Length: 238
Ligand code: C5P
Image (cartoon, rainbow, N blue to C red; front, side, top):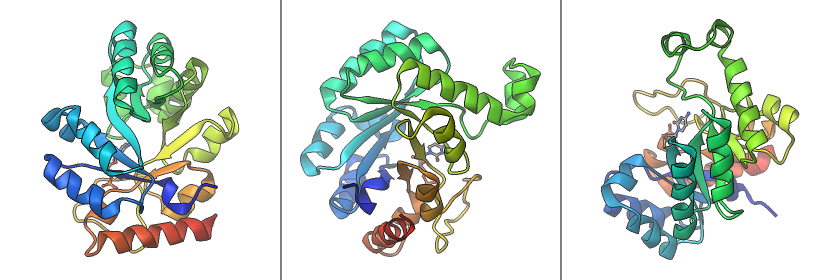
């Protein structure tokens, strides 16, 4: 049965493997997934994934937000599979690319679609040439792109806690919703840039399958205690 800790994705948002390993050791067994993003991957290369896999049984989420011609993305997926990555992100910008990504994942690496980057607003979409309907109603674009990911055979999408219920009702409970922007009631990181925030309890209650929690754990005086508090909140909400 899925436990509270299995819902938590901890992003290894560090610029060195030394720092990343410190947190993997600290949080091993306390979270379900470690996320490796561009900062760490570009600095340390694929070896960092091999090393982390030796240190923990947690699942590995490679957040590289792939976007290229379909065949290149498919080949990148083969490399991700060979590294033993459990999940990877791909931009929802073309159905063909998403299909090839899902195909490349070969049932071993799950593809999560990035519908729309959260720092894009109406003006950015207008500038990029999107139809007025999508610019004026950004949620309609998120839904359209989620539909593309679903049709392409992706495992799910990244979405805010406020969108989960709609996504699940449109595409079914097996279509994964991974939710960033998580802020427990007791956490208020300095200079917070997350806008559409939800608490861990609210997110899992709405149906989120995984929640990405970075700063509330990383910046806590005791990160292990903070992770445990989030686990308790998730288990209570469920
Ligand atoms: O909890 P915190 O805000 O520190 O989490 C930051 C992490 O969440 C980063 O790794 C970032 O890539 C990821 N993320 C995000 N917003 C999104 C998608 C992912 O902050 N819309």
